[in-house]
Image (cartoon, rainbow, N blue to C red; front, side, top):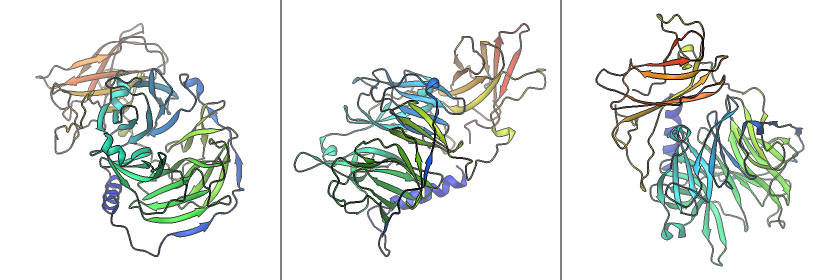
Length: 486
């Protein structure tokens, strides 16, 4: 864990402990927003050609440089993983249906970055599901685990919608509650995934008919609530304290017919972005950019109805789903204000030639070297044993440990992997699975290794025996820095 992770975790724990306690202060500040007249015409860079055909209304989530697309109308695989760095689709998973391990009426795909999971509510089965991202990418048939099932008692207390994962005891989002007249009431709520029970977030009074969506930033300690039917934004601390209310130029206390304002808010890189309509079309054609306190900066005018947005930090881009062409694309926001530091050669995960191999060129590049996880088909969360004092390893039901390695052919020729060897202790014989088919340039493959003991320091070599060139060669990948040991 990095120093930044420690600070964020400590701040989150402190904030969550205060949810029911409130915080003293001079009260929230109310401001009247200025006219939104700083309009910048933008053009989407389309990526439709790199994606499968997806239905209208798909939504986006971001996990590092992997974009997760949820296609709610699919009757096949409902989730798509797209590699931003390589501009290619790398997996489809999440089977449609009402059977075990299937989903049919999903909510949004929230990301648990620390646990490398997708958290998704299936409203048909009233189950909160957990998709391990690494396992799902490696295996299209991966079935999610059930975190908790919401029974009638839990649902009567409200259920989550448009939610964001905070930690294993808190998911924040819209709290949908059954009203007295058979209609739904809405506020912001906190769901405890362990119990399935929701409680209210903060104590701000809702206007009649006030519907909203939220964005959360743990580093900034901020929850932003944007009005769907009111031109209004609220900024909260993580403990639920209302900090500011910004009334837009079109604000009225009562909703105006079917007028729609803000949807899909995102906090990114010290900015708050939200799709904006101010018409009766729910999907607006503008994206409003604000600072972290909700002060207006500029309007990014796309000119097409926007369904969903997500932010990619490494490239400083907003990825966008529209109801037009292109359906999927991105907006470059310029050079990141705080770009990630360049990685040293040791931290890139690139291959290193062995001194005795006489290698002339590079064939494989390791894009991500990471521990695999099992397919977990249980109805309650399963606690895996700690090793080396941390949950650094994940065991399968047979007690073995699985690791998945993702490699890209960066040479200019097609090659076929004939055999893979993995260095282990003499007493352990690994089980190795890999795809034995021709790999064209820029295409990728997975090698999955299962061993009976945790991977030990010093066992760092995977050897690929390749064919596809006149002279057979042996290419060895040395994993330098991403081995999951403590």
